[in-house]
Length: 440
Image (cartoon, rainbow, N blue to C red; front, side, top):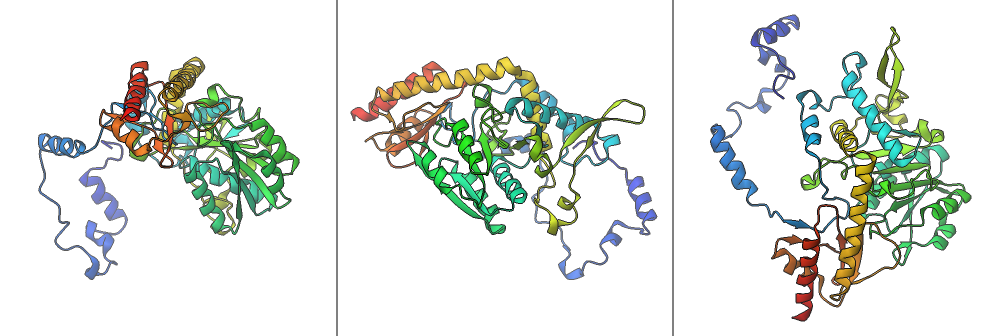
């Protein structure tokens, strides 16, 4: 943190004196002696910068680093412009503290406001919050939003939603005595007839993922019409890169749109940190949890940013809160905002076009060597193949050549992902290697 929170020994002593203490140890006088550390922590001796560097390099060398990545399933390998890390690495942004004091937090508040604005432009929705922990949390919070508004205790979720998102939704619903009903899939997308059957008067909402876990494009607008006809709210969990090409959640009739912002400038990072974005229509704005930043004017008429529409129960009266989200992933949201600003609409659309074009190229190449696509219909940049070839054999052959293949869904099914980072040569090599496995 450098000099972010700096104080000298003299300043520390001054603060101690003001609090009525003479020594730092006096602050902990109420802690029983039996639980205090007497001999310090069992830490090794300090090392020089060179020694620490060598130690960390040796630890990092234990990781397997693939030169080619063809796996997604919720975490995606995208190009990140250098300007993103340059801006977000500035020391003044390196804090997760909530900017309650607007008069000293204008920079952070403006950054969040810009993030909210860009997410609204991407989704077509009216309002966005300052982010939540990840995409799964966002989906679960969206279910809670709809339940608290309608006082209904049944949440319908498509079977094609990412399994990890589904588990978080189930955990939230367990704590609120709500029932989760899975809507079955048909040919890799939500069964519309089954949705109509299960959307009873007790259903508060229906949640679908676009593109779904298998990479397929759902008939989102039609599903929204079915949901609204039953008097329930429509929640869409989206991939923000795909959103650059697909109809927006607003165009599909969504009441709430959520997703994981990891593709927007956040590296894979061994699973995090990521961020979840949440957007809603104006009618649902008061139910939106977490932080919201608004634009206003100060006493001198100058533009200013503040936290707004805050339900204080979320922070203080927890027993009355509809959500336990009281913080946000501000640094990750800043990263997403810088990424979106650097890419611009044209850059984001070009990224999406390359993703889908290259994915379709690989799908056809794999079909030519025996890995047929499991589902028909349109897909974005992920697809599932089915083959008599054991998935384990295929993936092992690729790993031996430095290629991380798709995610095995079953002994014969593999979920592949292609992004703009994959070259034609890499895709051709992948198909060639799979073909060699088939000829053994």
